[in-house]
Length: 325
Ligand code: PBG
View 1 (tube, rainbow, N blue to C red):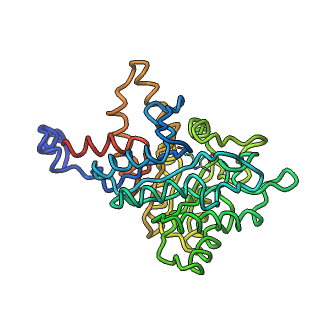
View 2 (view 1 turned 135 degrees about the vertical axis):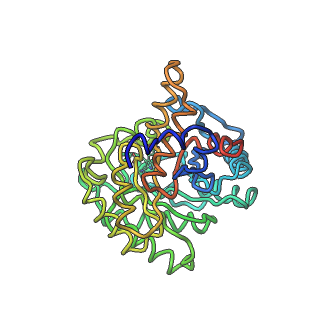
View 3 (view 1 turned 90 degrees about the vertical axis):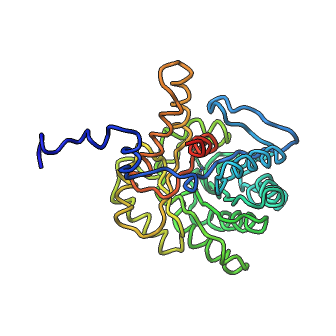
């Protein structure tokens, strides 16, 4: 039917009509809040490149986890800022290290929220790469054991889910096998399966102090020009035992989210990364855009593209906004 019999504006005329025919809706159930844990007590140190985000000591992580839980958010994901770094990332898998302590405290004090842990070595190695370096090269197979050890230590601390973000080949299988052997077959793996080598991680690397000290991550993170490879990466991780497949970043990769949604039958998570967050906050600080509206529209777009879950630094604000509607 064509105009004038058909008029698209009829169902856009009132807020109620728009609500009734809206195809996609964000829900607080979709949200995962990333938090940065640091040693100390009563520490709440602003992260310059990410306005509104902080380095938080465990007591403060507990407070924010409680706020997130009260806002109806089902899960947080924890990143650690270790007290020291070394070539083998010892503080990634020590039982008394920062993420392990933060997990324990949150599980004890805010049992209602699920705790996911980021499994990677880059914030814990002195060279800043996501794996072990041998002769100037990131050694894939030598890194797997340490990644599996890290995931296991998180599970032992009480993590409800682990999320490997290192992009070493075979790490999902290695982690799955280790968790299964050690009595953690019930712990799901959310794999950063499709993680691009992206400039959008800039602010996070300041936040996590995890920039590589030489070279870049292009030998393990995906090339932004590739889309078919994303399918292959996702299927490899599914074969190895992944329960949720993540695409990262989100906004510049909506086509990848959409394509994966057509091809795989696991839940898809998308990471609305630091650069996406900080650009919007910066625009607002300049007085040029309304960050809140931009964020709501962006997350809705990520959902519309096919994401079931969204990791976002704005999760608490967004959940509260959704609750007020
Ligand atoms: C660790 C990791 C990174 C992010 C999540 N896990 C950074 C990187 O790969 O350099 C980025 C998150 C963000 O930018 O918000 N490997």
